[in-house]
Image (cartoon, rainbow, N blue to C red; front, top):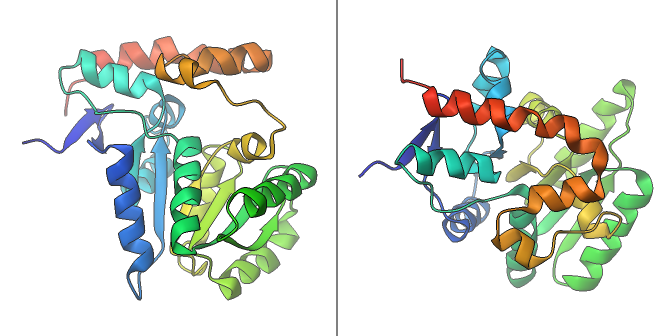
Length: 244
């Protein structure tokens, strides 16, 4: 039985959210585990990989790859090799916090602006009291501050490094430093810290179940319309793609 689906040449594992969380937990609890870079693949990253060899290498070297975005799942279904469900960065972050609350995991939050970063940390401490927030830093650091930031994360050794720097910058940043960060898991979560902090509304469950979360986000953030123009191009290219 095939365990992967080919999306524009990228082998995407057929993983449910539950199975993805199980894999992450195994990595966190394994002594001596090297950093696992979790990438939630969306159409933007998949399209960028077609002309960006360095990004494609980052995706190929990911410790765990999941299907983020209904476009990825819909294409897999239309090609006759369906992925079981979406496993988004935002949903995975919430599930990791829930599991981390049960297991006493530690987190480091990197990204968003200072106000949002502080709010997100406060919300997590309130809603997940057994989670340890070892540190946090906003995402508007200067290049000359980067070394000190990396050193702080290296010393703190969080179980989970949450990187909300936007895709694919977060993926590039994690890959650049994954050998020295000393976290067990690092995951790019887009704008999810804004959702955790409450500064950006999360789509109601009914919207998510209907797979129209993208529409809710567009209505609340009209500036995203340019990004939506990529989706028809992605769908066409992915549907006609033939393995080389």
